[in-house]
Length: 204
Image (tube, rainbow, N blue to C red; front, side):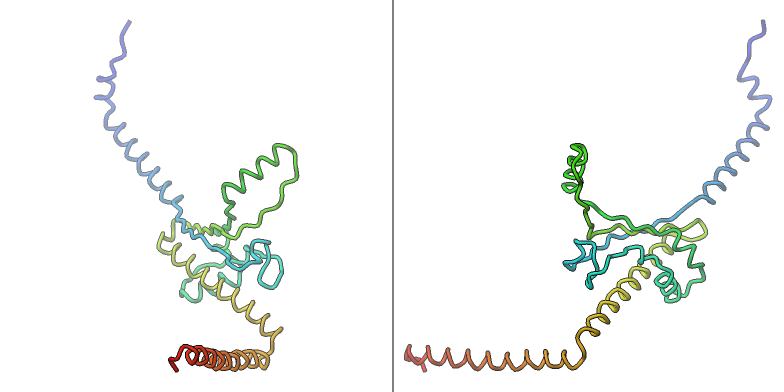
């Protein structure tokens, strides 16, 4: 019975084996390149009181998906001067709430006991943007930064507009004037009290 000689086999077919290895390597490199993705992420936090109840400053339900709304993404793209489809960017965006470890542990314990788990409204979120191989890590980072900038600008303006609707300009002027008047009165009163105490001490 003739034994299989691996060395002899390799010597005989090494050109073909080498060629196949080169083609296989090139194929996998091309495949990996085409499936390369770049992800940028940021952690954001809503600091106003109502956020812990899942509400906006106006008492409406907080919708964090608005971060990747068509309006916000379109504005970010225009600001950066990029030529990219709005829906392509939106499809790569995710917003995930951060639940503190102690809250998660407490919720898990209640769930195991079959008790009702109180809903937790995160105030911190992880925002991610993933882009395809035709872009770059720098593109993803700049795009996400601009999206967040546009979102918070819009969020702040919306809240300010609601405040202005409730408080007309004339009322704000009155508030400022009132603060100014009471500051002067407070200063005069303080001066009078200090003068009185200094007089008793024989200083004034």
